[in-house]
Length: 81
Image (cartoon, rainbow, N blue to C red; front, side, top):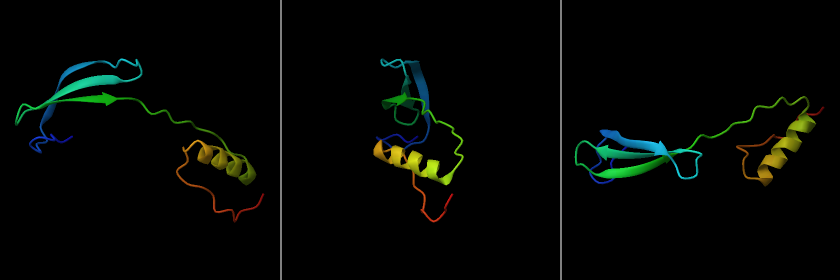
């Protein structure tokens, strides 16, 4: 993490508590070089594991994820069942 004021990399945590949404953690950090304080919010990112038994099912899952904007890519469509 970098201080936006001086560009220093020596930040340490001053205060840590649950965020107001109760999902993440709010941390107050201070730059040891210039004394600038910043607030960061940390939340966990859930990942779902699934077993795909066929290429047809994989295509359906990728299409569903594309609809919700969660897919990192797709299939090339060359494989057959």
